[in-house]
Amino acid sequence: MVMILVIVAVLVVIVLLTLKFVTGKRGGSYDDEGDDEHPIIHMSGIYSIVRKSPRESLAARRPTEAGIKAFLEGAGEDVNGKPLNDFGRAALLKHWKVQMEANLREIETGDKSGVIFYYYDFPLPCPVCADFINKGNFVTREEIYKHPEIIPPFHLGCTCSLTAHRSGGEDTLRETVLVGMVPFFVCDASPALPEWTNIVSLPASAEAKS
Image (cartoon, rainbow, N blue to C red; front, side, top):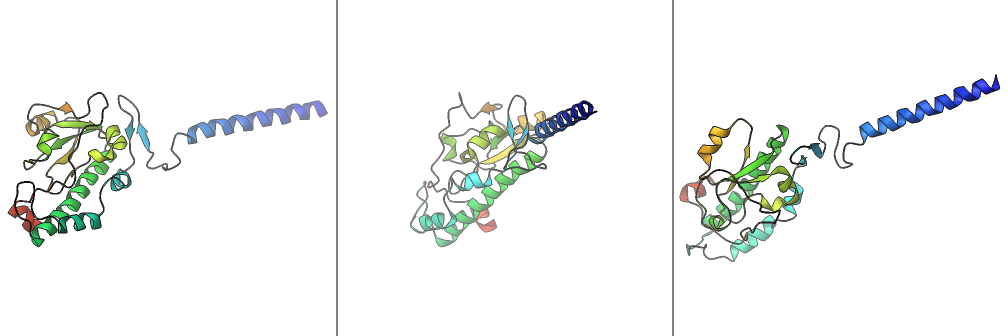
């Protein structure tokens, strides 16, 4: 009788340990910083797609609003020698904030639908970015996670935008790029980017909106 009780107790312990091990494996696939609803590592494949918003990481790499305002107050002209006035300075600061929010929202929205990569677009030509980025250069979501500084705007008055490329949109994609999609990163080397202190005055229409 005692032997039977011992055997039953051993079996119960084995079952409990097995259940704990299986449960632990199922629950351990998420990062401590994430939650069940929005895991940081969302999917695996050709790229390891990261689903954590880059807001905080980007903010740590960009000047503060106070820093930008102070810099603009001491700037007398843009890269083309065009004089700056108070109205133009205020428009540049607001444009910086609006463009950054728009690009961050593009990424956050893309994360919800599993976008793998994004390409750079220029609704208006940018004389500063032209030396660094071509229309149609693309980056992966993982590259954005590792290098949040590649999110526009890159400088004051920057017109570059980051656009999600969604599957099934090849025709639309061809219409938005000049020579097809080309990787922005070469051999995983961090590409050169413009200094944020480069100032390009906004067109009168953009200033009015700002």
